[in-house]
Amino acid sequence: MQINIDIEAATPLFTQLINQIKQAVVNGDIEPGAPLPSIRQLANDLEINNKTVAKAYQLLERDSVIQSKGYRGSFIHPDALTNSTIDLNQWVEKTLTKVITDFKQAGVTDSEIRIAFGHILKNK
Image 1 (spheres, rainbow, N blue to C red):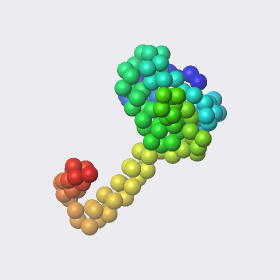
Image 2: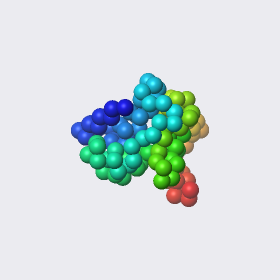
Image 3: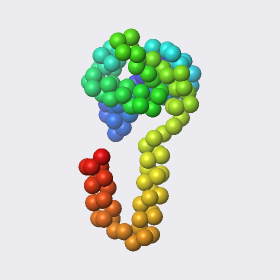
Image 4: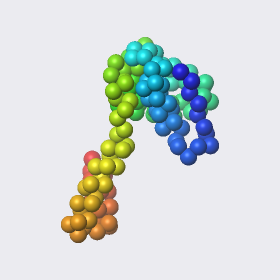
């Protein structure tokens, strides 16, 4: 699996990393159960910050594309192929768009929506 990070791109580095790992799974370049490089090793190889790789791995684990096995490392999840095609960001945007449209049809202002959204996030 070859990963290429473009530090000049508008897309965040961790997003580039996530997308490339998911694409490698979809293309069959990396199979379920295959080990991934350690966070430190991949960060060194790509010449990026460890925290960037850690964030990407954390989000990939949340999405069940990879699984961490403690000190043994990170591996491609058995259900990675199915889970690599799910885009949570797209789902969130679609869901929020529907809810905001419903609010606006009910006469709720943008300011009221922002204030309510801020309260909900703060209290979470």
